[in-house]
Image 1: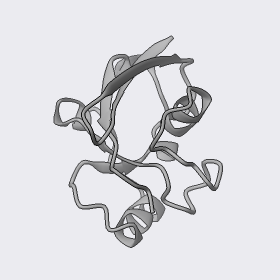
Image 2: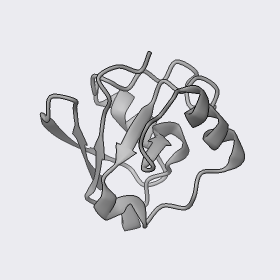
Image 3: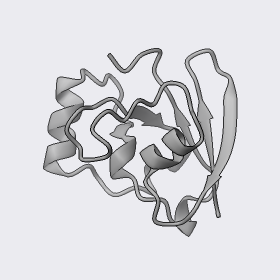
Image 4: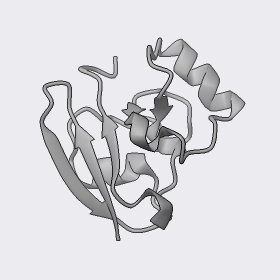
Length: 106
């Protein structure tokens, strides 16, 4: 299992576990993480799963692809570490991942 810590806008941390291969968005939804909506079900078409990857982890992720970058721009994601949770596949390399959540996805 992969351990992930979600830190909400009030700095409250929630740690969950998910199976390798699961998207970060699905892990959040499966564990009822407030702040991750995932309206499109993980198809990179709604930008309701924006997070900011903790700087300590940002270098371990591949760069966003064009579709994700476009969605982040439309969501006005204001951090260079902003990512869509649906585009991050959990792997053993990400065990212990920490992400920060915005106050709202809308």
